[in-house]
Amino acid sequence: MLAAGIQYDIFFYNPNIHPVKEYEIRKNENIRFAEKNGIGFIDADYDVDNWFDRIKGLENEPERGERCTKCFDMRFERTALYAYEHGYDTITSSLGISRWKDMNQINGSGERAASRYENLLYWTYNWRKHGGSARMIEISKREEFYQQEYCGCVYSLRDTNRHRRSQGRDRITLGVKFYGREEILKPDWTELNPNLN
Image (tube, rainbow, N blue to C red; front, side, top):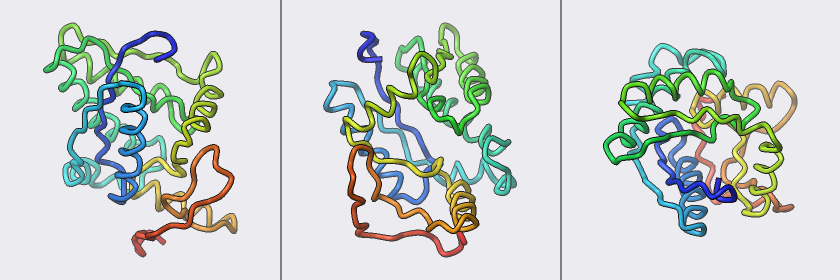
């Protein structure tokens, strides 16, 4: 977006991310990028209790299922409200760059949220097309971004670790993988909930 001359701010509202140290790593990566590029950064609440209330009963839904829709809805609703209250006319999301996400599910949540407010548009740009995925990897390596190995929520972490173990792989170690770095950092903490086995 910067290369295209589009002015934007980052609204960081991700109460789904677990554990809190993973949340802080991801948030700090966004802050670092925003500061480096002169982009506004809005730090919304880590509203985790509200997120768990909203997701209650959907803990065993698969990735791309109803739990994800509820999660996207919650986050886009807050984004749209902030945008409306602060005079923005367009919102969008980089969630769709991931091949693990359902673009229609994301766009549906964004469009529903924006439709609540007059003169607010959700931009449904497909970030994967026109070399977008390759560009994401290129930027991630250049910036040495943290490499997220699961969506973010406690249930995605649980399910990803289950899958990895079924494939004979180690569980995710948080805070150690970064794009463009050959070495893996040694974690100075391992705060995975033992109940995620």
